[in-house]
Image (cartoon, rainbow, N blue to C red):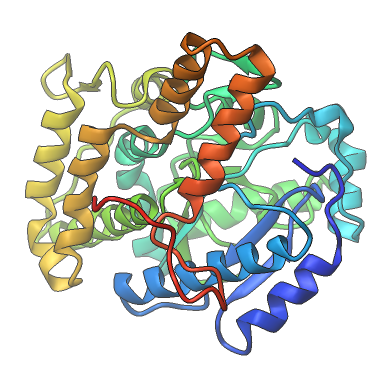
Length: 370
């Protein structure tokens, strides 16, 4: 992983993307790169745009002998060797957070769903928080940190949770109550604005969206699209129930936090707690129940196949499962530690382009069907 990749990559990406195709922007650390779509009106459009963005990044990186990886941690990169991007926001973050910020050699997947009504947005944030651990478990891609196999499927949250104002969101009875709390923090000089709230889900400070932030980055594009579709459908289902004067039961953060930890530690392997039943339930059973709940919404949003793909993730395993498998396979074949970690990185680079064509390449990476 390049500690300071060529800055020309960003300009080259922008040229390849063209107007209206989305954006490639710097992140806090120079070794990171962020892609974001414009507003998409369907899951299919989101997939097409993200595929194009990945292709642009890959093509620009290739001109410098580099390859991008879509994962929430790099298996062996060292945070102490990284340099942060120059800019007012990043300089303030580095100064305020010191080593906590310097350790942010992590990447996450954020999914925005547009909700114009502020009160509805607040209500849905309270309700959908229950499902955040379920989404996290499907996305795990950060089992390694600083050349060590951590024993966690998602180590990223262990790093990110060192920051203040992270974790599960607070519960507010109204959007106005939320704004009053933000105003107290702003007036006290603690934060500049609500963009410094980094909860697992938040009402975005600039856009009329409810932004899901708990997820690791899915290495395979189709896996990420499945999780985005699930999130959109869950919000649609909760809004539909609300119109019928029904709602999802809101459990305490103490309980939901236990599932968050299980998703972080075990991913999909050891199940999550069904608090209505009061017991741990196999993840595949919980997923089937969720897919039944959102069937009507998946049909309305035209993403039945995308949400069903979540079952394929469970059957195959997440990126974290496959990284660990490649690591152990390399070790069993006689590879040393560094060689085994390199094998994981090579797999990540290949898998990042699974089904995605680098711009100008004219073909996709060869693979077997999902």
